[in-house]
Amino acid sequence: MDAVDDVKEIYTRYAQAFIKTGNKQHAARIAGVDPELIDEFVERADKHPDVLQVLADDFQVPDFDDLDDTKTWVLERLAREATYRGPGANQNARINALDKIAGLTNIQPAKKVDLNSGKGGLLLVPVSDPKDWEEAAKKSQEELLASARD
Image (cartoon, rainbow, N blue to C red; front, side):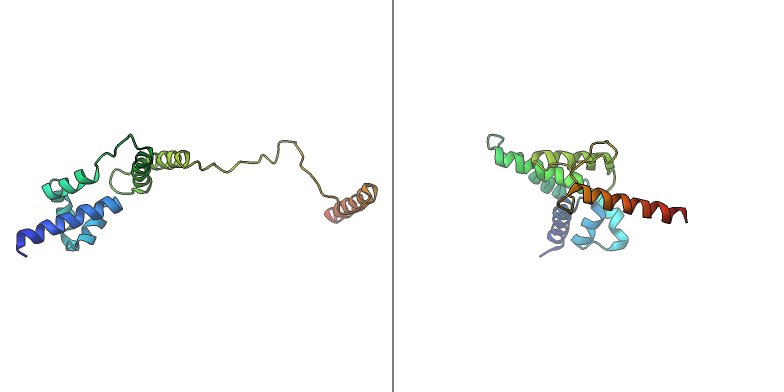
């Protein structure tokens, strides 16, 4: 393998790692770039034809006639956006991407319960006669009030 092939291989590995991680510096480390040269490498790599070709090949649009392929393609790109934390990352974009993923996968958000709504739920009474339970509860409340006064 000659030097040109080695350079092409590094740029290709960098582009593939960037597609997976969404982080240019981390992708450069994965590709084997010297840590002292990463910033300079990333700047050059953004314009390198081998990198641009790999990124273009990854961005091939699926056949939108096949709904399963389309949904998978959209979910992959939303997942990439939802996990991207590199330069230009945006918290709102991540939240929106996660919201869209939840909608496409029918994930329902947890329902909030308003404990102050005034609407009561069921209370299981551990005795057979409610009057016995009322007397026990009243006695318990009186004891609680007495202990709070002390």
